[in-house]
Image (tube, rainbow, N blue to C red; front, top):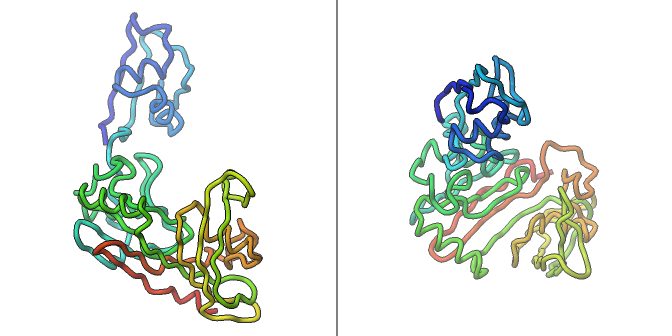
Length: 285
C-alpha cells in the first residue's frame, strides 16, 4: 500500500480538475484516480472529493493509503485454505462455495488469491500478474472444488498451454432437478448476456459437455460432467437447457433457495499434475 500523502494546491494548479492534479502528483492514470475518488480515498478539506471539482489556490488534498494498479493482491492470512495438491510449481485448493477466485480491486480482500498470497508470496507477478497473479483458470464464486494456481512462471505457461490445447481433464458433479438418466454428449452454442449466457443457433462459442447420471431420483439426480470445452457458465446453462437446472442455481431456473448452487469441481488433471476435491456433504440430499 502507498502511504497517505498531502497535496497543497499552488497557483500553477488553481483552476484544474481534482482528478487531473491527483493523477499527475501520484503518477497514476485519471481512470485509476477516479476509482480512488469513488472509494473515498481522496479528501478535499476533509471530505470525499468529486472528480470534476475545480481546485483553488490553498486547497489541501489528503490521499489516504491506497494500492497501485500494478500492485499484487493484499494478503489475507485469516482465510482458511484446504490445499489438495502442491507439485511442480502448481498448487490446487478445494475452494469453498462463496469464495471468489481473485480480487477486482487492489484494496479488495477475501478471495482465494488473497489467501494464497499470504502463504505463497512468490506467486505475485506470475502469469497475468497484478490482481490475477498465478491464476490458471476460474470457477464461479458459487461453485466449489478444485482450483489451481501457478507459483512459478514456467508452470503457469505450461498450464495455460495445456488448457489452450484442450489437454486438461475436468470432472464436475452437480445435483440437478428432475430425474436424469443415462449418458450423453451435448453440444451447444452459448452467448454472453450480462450476468448469464443464453443458447443461440448461430454465433457465440461452442460448448461441449459429456453428462452421465451417477444417481437418479424422482425429484433430483446426481450428474457427472466432463467438459470438452471451457465456456462461461457452460455446465449451468447446458443443464438448464436440458430441463435439469442445477439445484440452487436460481439464475438458470432452479426453484430451490439455497445459499449456493450445487455444482462442484471434482477433479482436474493435465500432464503430470492432478488434483481432486471430495464432494461436499450437501450434495447428498
